[in-house]
Length: 316
Image (tube, rainbow, N blue to C red; front, side, top):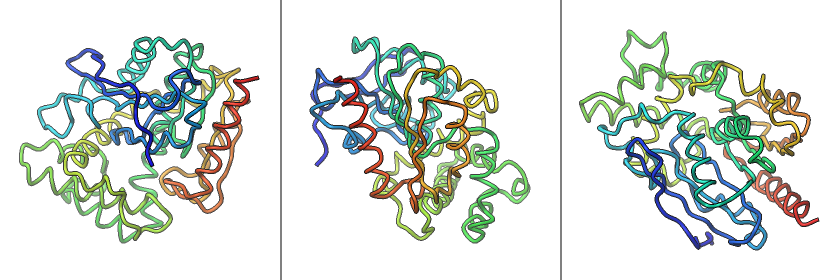
């Protein structure tokens, strides 16, 4: 059963945007902010299940233009130019201030690890610990692997993905090509591009390329918003100097971290988590054997164990 929120609302973050947030768990507990993936997936209360609801105050945030935030990227008129990594970092800090939280723990998954790292490196004095799963840093090499290199492991599915763009663009930047398609004024073009992008996304979520997509993939508004935001971010390299989150991991000195990563993660190969653990001496890498990008029972066990350990340390 998902926890029920005890507080929440829409926070005006400027640029005509309002982000949805809610808190679950103990209002007086150890604060932790959940930084969801995607970019553009939206927060899910099930993520709060990692944390002991008696020990933690869990804050969930829908990043700009997705989930229950407004305006929504499923509307083609929504301006994505005011949706960048640094806008999202500022939104997290504005939410912390709005809630009167002095310092909090950061929990992020997939894209949420990139955003969580960017936030923590800019505001290390506001972060008590970090718990990260399915580690990414959105380097150009990681984007290239996901939309080109990974095709060597899933040639049939990647052939269909590549065939979704005009022939003239199939040997070039597929992210840029799909970005143009989902910004088309023709709703039919947008729909086909969204469907083709998400077929590839589904194929690489787990080690089984024939596994069904998560239930939320069925929501038409979620689908278009997600693909618009993902292609917008990855086309721009997430507005990060390439490799900066690894090069500047020393900014995290003194912040304890646990990095949980599946050994069979196709979307984000283990090497990124390993490199981050080497660059960040206060981080511990936990490799979950047999887990893919979305994890399995062992992933949940590792996350809950780390969360319980951080809660116990905070009580001492």
